Image 1 (spheres, rainbow, N blue to C red):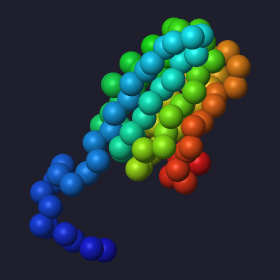
Image 2 (cartoon, helix red, strand yellow):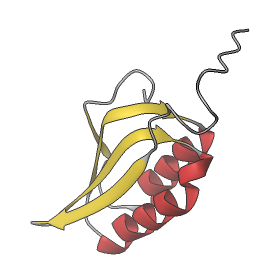
Image 3 (cartoon, one colour):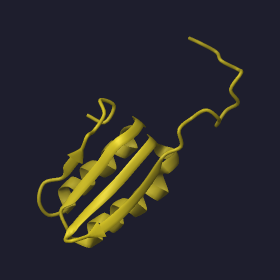
Length: 96
């Protein structure tokens, strides 16, 4: 176990973001950074907005650096509640 006390807690981490874009009958959920429980309310709102659009959803995850089970659970929920298949755009290994 490495103890790096040179970086204060909460610093040096890539804070996560979740945003939704709706256009031309498609919805894109854009994720970046660390998708974890700290992003829970923002991610829940974004997923609810994507569901409400009633469009097929694309997830742009190319800039995700970490995803915990809370992120996976919301994506699974989205996959079951939107029409058509959920499309992933260039998901990194951490998302796959």
